[in-house]
Image (cartoon, rainbow, N blue to C red; front, side, top):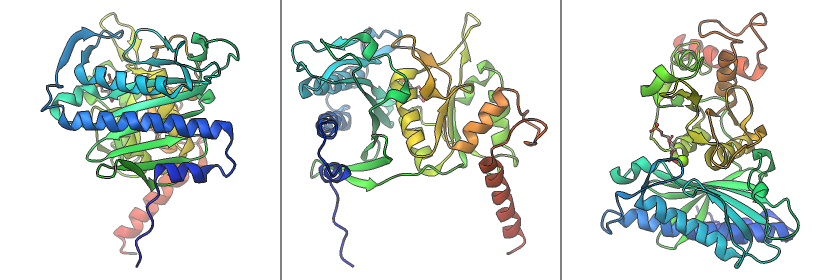
Length: 374
Ligand code: AHM
Ligand code: MG
């Protein structure tokens, strides 16, 4: 059988919009800049141990986290690529205290804001673990001048596009521009991304959960009950879930995007007794919720859809649940007290989405049939 012709990212983008609108051409150029940066970061990660690029810089970032040399490198590379495009008027990053405006390089009509988590999972840098870069692209609201900070503080619903690069055994790009989610794999020999999945659909439920269970004593209310439910036969999969946790949200989400399941980093009680999330709304929660929703999944705080949250500040953190419809819905029900960990969903203890119940029943039936040899 003849080998199917490999589809490059460039060819994919050319095919996506039959009519070359300005939006489309600008997006293609910007994505090309981001993927060039990603190739440079991937290359640096591969040789970091040899090039003295492991370890910390000795400084802390705005979140009071120690900055790794690779955090700094990835940040400068990604932000630099956005600036060079001439299409971006301003950027914000998990690694930078405030917004960056590009008054000299951005053209008068530079229409986009880019927000990045340049190196997600950076505790993995020194142990040769998996890492990611997450990006969000917004069209500016202000029509005149250099663009304002308000152009960066945006709800996920307003996203123009979002994506991530996963630096694993292979380097992958996953993006959405609101018309499905597509994945590409870097061929390091050729230096090009080739399409590996088109229009990814996240399964309605999965069989894994990703969470840092070591801190469960400090979780906000309802989360322990939710996880216990996933470990029981009364889970959405009809059997106990397995744990998969890499310390890199991008990697855990990638598994869930392809195979279903749920990632949860809830609000955690701090030393002052107050509850706060760890993950950043603008750099992590919003873009990944956007990708999840475009693939049929969802992101939630346990109370609200993440994409509807109005950000109050650039580095705002949120409790975060991300994944398949069935698990996110169940988490919301348990966390809001509609369901307890022991109770089955019934009309009496709250509304049940048919999809969730149907999934559970179907799985249970299949299991029984398998047992009975049918
Ligand atoms: P980072 O962007 O500074 O690396 O922080 C985000 C990361 C997520 O990728 C990961 O899921 C989580 O923080 C791990 O946190 P913990 O070590 O508390 O489990
Ligand atoms: Mg991160």
